[in-house]
Length: 299
Ligand SMILES: NC(=O)c1ccc[n+]([C@@H]2O[C@H](COP(=O)([O-])OP(=O)(O)OC[C@H]3O[C@@H](n4cnc5c(N)ncnc54)[C@H](OP(=O)(O)O)[C@@H]3O)[C@@H](O)[C@H]2O)c1
Image (cartoon, rainbow, N blue to C red; front, side, top):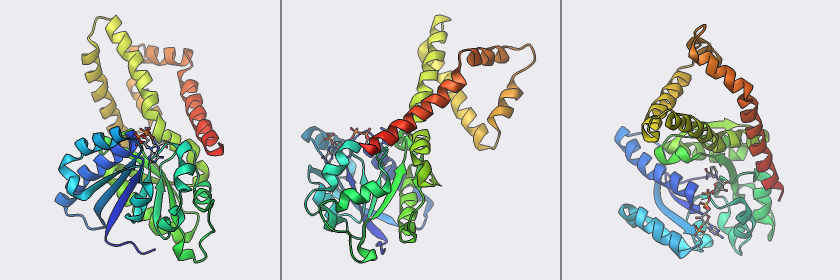
């Protein structure tokens, strides 16, 4: 695989997640330039979406960057033909239609296709590309499919993106490029593909799950006469602080014990969570999300 130092990036399907990644890459680029980090450079960005309203939304959002961004309405083929690396950011159900468009297999030859689609494994993505054609005879002309799962914090440059380890040695460089790109929007971690449905859900879905806990806490703040907005400020800083403590290597169980003084209020709160089955509810919630990801891949 030979990728130019300055490569063109394509994004096929640029809704909630695609836009978060795009914003993160454009903002992260400025930061990287300031830090003068070596590596690849994204040259031109090609985007395709389905509706005229999405084209307008992206034109407004990217008004500062328009000289180096081209937005197509429903021209996935042109997006891919013009790009060296492509992020597939549509819904899982749209993947087969998009990848089986006429000319797609040729357009993707030797390129890197990064799929962020829940449930779609590397093998089924490769099969969707060759559904109407023939497998590339030369290994060097095969598409390099990489599976990645970011989360919504990409918008703030704070995602964790899990990236599947390459099944073939020839895909190793493609995984490196994927990690380089997603490091613009946070951190990346490589995991075996066999664990991707579960751990991809851990990366992609748990922010939403934590918001349910936040809502419950805020309800009680309001019931206790405190403004929701002010309660949210307290919780936000608490979560940032907890993240820093975990990042510094503190174990969650050790932290819990440290703040639970004998006869104190924290232990009463923790015991109530256990009575309500919150620990197993979170475990089951992650299991359900992982199972749904697996189902999406089977459809
Ligand atoms: N949302 C998350 O937190 C999250 C986290 C990790 C991974 N993901 C994955 O990211 C993917 C996208 O999720 P999302 O929440 O960003 O969905 P979304 O907001 O609905 O975005 C889907 C995008 O695909 C475009 N699209 C639809 N049909 C298309 C077609 N035939 N050709 C080209 N583009 C087409 C849509 O264009 P229009 O808007 O014009 O219809 C839209 O831009 C999903 O596969 C999901 O599994 C999401």
